Image (cartoon, rainbow, N blue to C red; front, top):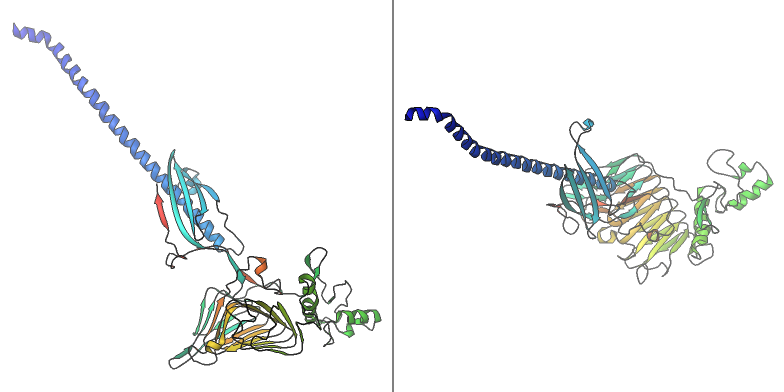
Length: 467
């Protein structure tokens, strides 16, 4: 009977067991599936956040590249608060499939530190990155060493004695730069460069308060002049073709009366003795005035008149052993010579600047402590620049024809020659030396990211944060 009962109810019991099993299995399955989905979603979210971080990193890299491009530019300037945005695509980029985007901003944190903040986004997830860098401020000055022609620099060695030539770059030449193994150049050595021609055929337009270009050979700028009929690069009486009117015009334009031709020297002379005076007011550098010197002139210790801004020498200017300041306090002196400038250093105090402008050559030399420029100097030689023996200087030198630097003999410390770039920033036009040719070549250090290895505060090790 029991057997019959069990047989008749087995189907119901199985059904009960199956239902009970399903009652246990279904919740368990739901828990397992839910946990799995949660893990998948969390993993996906983590992957998206990682992608977002790498998108932010890509944005930081792009901003860094932009800043480096500005650093290497001659004219670019940083705009603090600048923001760039971009899309990070899958490989190959031409697929057009995006994996994330970034928005990156650069800001000035202090006078020596800037920060880059970049936010990346991927599938709605975001990540941010911040990087700090040190930097140096904008600076513009004349090219440390430059020449339209060839540059030659030589140091010397004898036995264990060595005299060095050391120069901060760029050293830029319109031709070639020749050195030997005892020359050290910090910075670029640039050969076969193009320079804007320096011209003194300009006049001051007082009505419009601007410099304007004059026709060549029109020294007085009145619009009338004799042309170079012979084509030899100068105008002489022969170019007047015996025309009395042209001969009178020739006499009027031939302002530099010690020669019989109108050339660039007349323009040079007129620019300083007339046009510059028109622009600046009374400088005392016209013939017969206090700062105009007729013939070769010697400037000994502290012999430049106190308070003088420009001195004009109608001949050679010879400058000897000015170990003291040009005047009692800080001074900024420009000496212009129609012929050569010969200078035995030192020439000024540490708070002074001396600008030397010669129509012909600038020659300099010194020995050890008697060969150093204490302050800044700025040199323009219409022909050659020659530096022999030793000395050091901060500033800029440019020659139109040729540059020679030679320590002559191997006496370390006494005949070593150092050229360092200037310390006065010319970004402000008021800081540009008075009387400097407008086309004088300059270099700009508009923005420079500091190297991690530099000493503080110039250097700044990048600090990265992820949040």
